[in-house]
Length: 132
Image 1: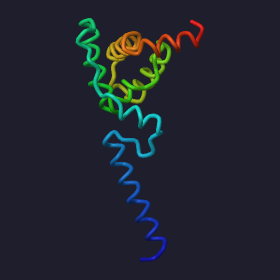
Image 2: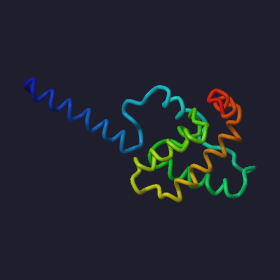
Image 3: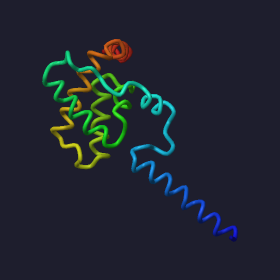
Image 4: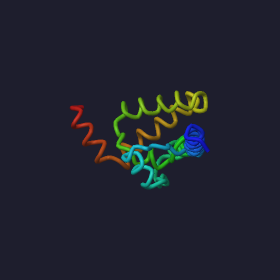
């Protein structure tokens, strides 16, 4: 096999492997910080959360797991409302019409409630750092 053909074949193989990883929801070159989030807890015990937050959690897990692990959103360092607003909007844009405006609101309501409850120490620290 000549050298040019070998390069073309190798490039095609890498493209297929990388494409398959993306289709499975895995990023081929994932930032180590994000990879660490993915390895954390994949569920939240919401049994003591209000009924509406429990319902919102179901939307959160169903919609967010279509593109990345639920653990990524659960374990990330977002805590403040404005951080979550930017993130949820970005995910809605990435997902196209997969996450409706109503579902986006449910997801936002859940993650902000969860941040003020389960991530309270992080939320309070970030709020203080932001001078709020």
